[in-house]
Length: 417
Image 1 (cartoon, rainbow, N blue to C red):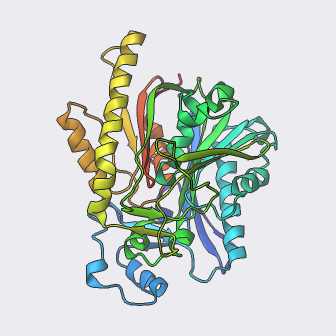
Image 2: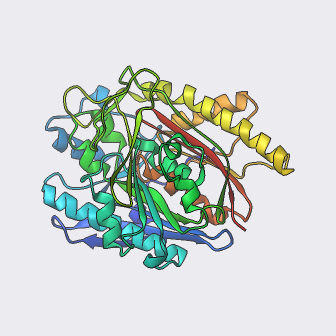
Image 3: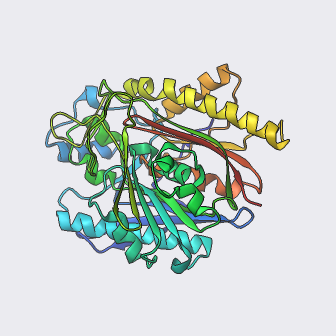
């Protein structure tokens, strides 16, 4: 595993298209399109807001907190793998937040279609993970603004940082519990169709409603969206989802989306509903902050304890299922080209890698997202797009998502060729 050392802003990265969105005095916006014609997959990723490095971030946070940042509150962010993150101004109105995030969402969908050389009329489904949507109809708004037909299936997934991996899993694995709760199985219905999958996270707005110094230092804005054709450009091999409710409230997150908030003993924590025609909502139950804030979290070691043990178990189970699948396909001995892992922080990934190696599972897990901070559901898609130019036809990829709640989705896929 390697960690980037560059401390430059994402906006200064070669190949990034930059502009100013004329809202609230001007919001910096940057994106990078990525395509790999040999595997038939393309997409776009990027961010919005002013870029803060680890030296300039404390002053911004003190303005947001309204008090000095105490010495014992300052995280060693470079040790956690984060060198920059992007935030929007403190004084945006609710209307400006809405206008900004709808415009940002529209751009990412449009540019992802361009990266795939698709027309909007060809897209038959959009599945987007978002931790805290600013409106219940956010996905409807951005698909309409992007020119995608009303008839296209829209699936909003609210499972915190696991949202984009869960989206991809829903599109590929017909045996997922969420798919089995529906009259029409999403994965079966999308086989062979053009589908946009990703995560769009306006986390600066979200964490701005919290006084948690850890969250304010770790999270920032970003999005990543890819275009896939299930069964053609990406084929499902093995996968598993798991939930382990965070009873202790190690990572408490407000649910900015409808959820029944009911869970009987042994029942699933996820509500799968159809709020309107061609719209599905997958909403995960969260341990919400008692003080009404948006997020409250333990320190980095608390996150390690929350995510590593169960995360290793799920990866181990999927890896075993993958090996069985290889035997069934007569491909025993083939190895995974890369593991795309949610970037909660560098220590979590490093410890997961160590535990897996102790069980004889060696996975290439590159660290790729130092310019963004923890960007929740966007991170897996950004990491995938960063690796996409190096991928080859028929490569096998492991994708590992996990997030507050607590939710885990891990799947092994084969790229097209």
